[in-house]
Image (cartoon, rainbow, N blue to C red; front, side, top):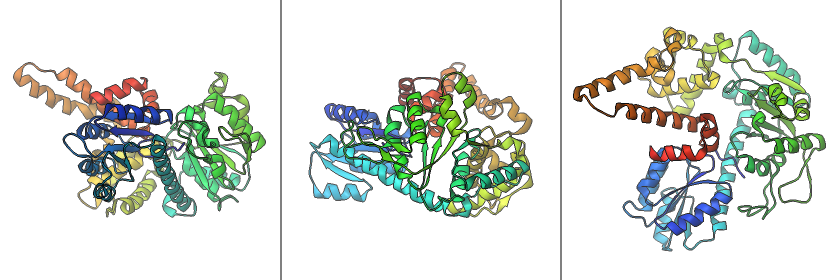
Length: 472
């Protein structure tokens, strides 16, 4: 099953027939999708406002806003979502209009559930193909994707990359979240003898454990509900190239055993298959987990650890190489101008000083996001302190040490003053609800729409998360 960007495997079903919603919910749920229901377009759009979705299954004849009218709003709220229109009326006009507005397919009731699953699987494969083409362009030398760094620790890292790239060893890349572990893996691949082969990446923590096996090793037709045809896994698709296993420290023990066997035997067995398939692939793995501690605690196989840890590369956090911030900012501005169609020429010295005073717990990824947001909000061509603060950095240095207070106290003070006029209010509940919703959405954003992963980050179960999002 595909790891689909832009909503993970979340599907929103919008139909006023409870029985149809139940059938679709049950069938897609068994196929590994996270399904949410709505009986009309307004409620369906409210679900989309809570976070991205991989697909929206949308009836045309709905109470209030029609499905055709809703397509435009769906594409505005969630441009990446695949819209599949369903209707009891087999109308050519409706079909043409639905596709014109951006639907990927049009199914007439009653439809076969496997037909819907096939539509979703094809959409997942299309997105994977687009992602792989982009990856291939990057590893073939797009200068904007080069790693930026001039600090001594980064120069040493570049030397190590050059040393290990030409050798067919397994490499374990270690570092905090956001330090650029995938960029290191791409650099190793691009400078290796496998550069003309594919670079295939999979985030082991972003895919539910029960689906990761099929994603990595593939499956035969009929292996499980939703397996409507044979599918090659990531190991097969990376043949002749490199497979990047990101966040391998989060992998379930049973899958660790299978990964170890692949490393030993150089062959995989697809789910539901009886024959093994030989694979020629170099493994590059990454983790932000202390694997030695995980081995000691019994959460990670010791033999797999030694197989992966043939050569280890450690990325420094941004707080340990702050002298690279000006170089990184220039790099992100150049790339942002291309991606965002902006014309930012640089950044002020005061703004750079503000960036340098921040500790960057989110590392390079946090810095990049800050610069991008600042570029979108910029009024002129030079980024200043105002744009950087508006970009999400907020108070830096000593003020930042006080935590969230520096950013939220002014807002809370205004809320208190407004309530004080009347003497009574529900200020406590309003603030708790507002903060909670922002936190939930930020966790979902960081988890790329994967509700299970977001729930784990928050320390709550997925049902609690879903209920809180619906209540928002």
